[in-house]
Length: 181
Image 1: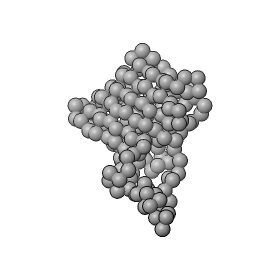
Image 2 (image 1 turned 60 degrees about the vertical axis):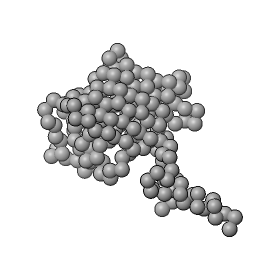
Image 3 (image 1 turned 180 degrees about the vertical axis):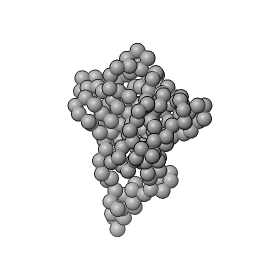
Image 4 (image 1 turned 45 degrees about the horizontal axis):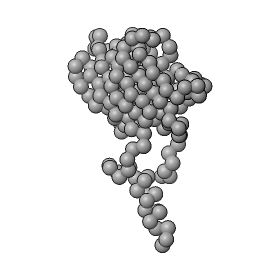
């Protein structure tokens, strides 16, 4: 009986019900495509692609990456040398860092940053925290990823669309779920 309160706490912590646990890695944002506003939120995780490039991704409540809005933020920076990364896309357009928004899922045309700011801080626990306020354009010549079931038929664009996109995130390292099913 003395372990019952601990068991109840673990069950509540692993629950997926609304408002039972504060999300430790929120991604909260808003974007406008041709002045039509949408909110985008979920959880964010990161993975190191190599020693100097990290990919921060959002997971939404939507279940199909082919059609659900997703975001990938690539940061080209050695966080072992400096825990803070700031990029002004208007001044430094050439490094690998980018913010990609796929508003119609990864089978449709993404947006890539043209101008704006991205700031990412590596926290003491190894997680990342950041903010961005950017403007984008659709990528010409995007090839949908056939590994997730995309085909050329999925490619769609409605002419030249413009995007403003801002938000904040806290990204934890990508791994398996700590909660057992």
